[in-house]
Length: 128
Image 1 (cartoon, rainbow, N blue to C red):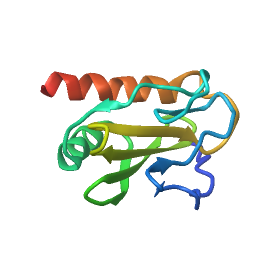
Image 2 (cartoon, rainbow, N blue to C red):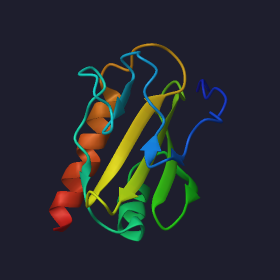
Image 3 (cartoon, rainbow, N blue to C red):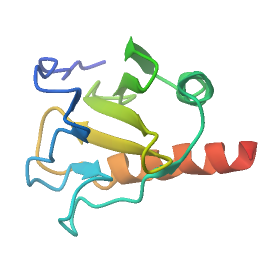
């Protein structure tokens, strides 16, 4: 088993109602992005507690931070141990959950971050 976890970023979190922008590589998606490569739709509104249950139900997930309007989790790939940082921001003004999912290392993720967010979306929509 390999472990390509990299170093936890120090620029994450919500600043002025925004998640950190994607770095311009094809291994990141962000619902607040205007760039077509990284743009993804925000998630439907649910509570952070409900969202946490959905996230924790997924394999190789560790919750790093949780507040009333923010959730940060790390997802680790099964074979190589790559870590993706996934953040959720409950935006009451827009009645959505903004999401950012990015690989720590490498340039391409073969669409895994987008696929993960869509899996979370389907689990949320299945609850409603």
